[in-house]
Length: 169
Image (tube, rainbow, N blue to C red; front, side):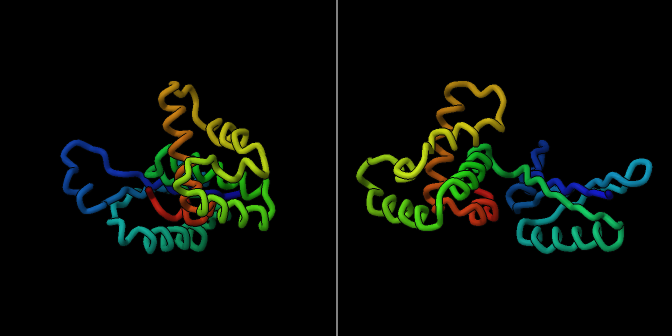
């Protein structure tokens, strides 16, 4: 099967302050067919990104015959990636009604200092442990920061994977 992979990365080269200020990102793509497979790189502004990704996916599937086009967005922080994975698990583990109850309880208890209402329906700590498994060898400080940040981010987005995935935070 012909596959392609699209990488979206921030520009982090020395002297690229102007590029960062204008929100320019790099889109790089590779595919597995042919001796080396076609590849390419382009630079676009954040406002053009969605349209350029759409056009690139069309080209890779229609013109180059790739049946599978995957995308990795390297702009996401580890906190955001953990929040997405955690939210995916919470959505799998809870029923729709339970998730609605969790969201309502979290809103009611927003400033009370009580723990997240997910604990009322599952072992949410286990979900977060699994979400953090994607990161190797975290220091204790990194582990705590990612754990707390991902939990707050997921809760703040009502465990909505689509919202968490669409927005680079």
